[in-house]
Length: 243
Image (cartoon, rainbow, N blue to C red; front, side):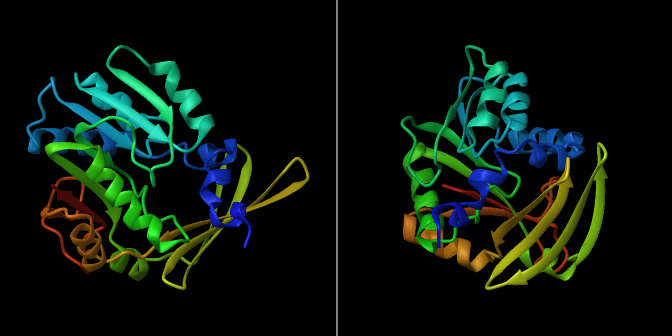
């Protein structure tokens, strides 16, 4: 298997088509989640936040607008190049592989919007959790905002077509070998493209095993961006707060 095949996200996330397909994401919902989370965690303006796998920086930029000191890191150079246009004294971005520890330590490490579980190599999931631990100051808090695999699989839409800015994206979803797949096919200027997103259907129990192996303690579990109680069968999200 080629390295490009293993790291599908390194190519797909770096294309303009990825950002085109998802351009209409609900930023209001993301802001509400950040409001709820920062208030719940009682984050002070003097404290620091690492946004792990930050993409183009939408969460980082909003957190910074609330007064926090934020560093965003992501593997996608194109996304970081865009995010860097928003940098200021208290907002920095850098290209970095999240399976490796980052250079600095933070009061809080956020991994948001299902930015976990992409890896073909299971060891990389644990390495990322260990990396989060090493990036936390003593008594620092980590947050992983992941999909609730049971709910998502139950609600899976097998096929749909999305038209965005004149491009027709044909999307198929299926579960295979423990991963939730989204196959995306489209043509642009006569050239055919095909990408597949893969996210491991990680359960709460598996996350607990990662935390135990990394020496972390799970403190709280929530099921949506309003921080409602988690339900395996009905919650859309699996939001984990740990130390």
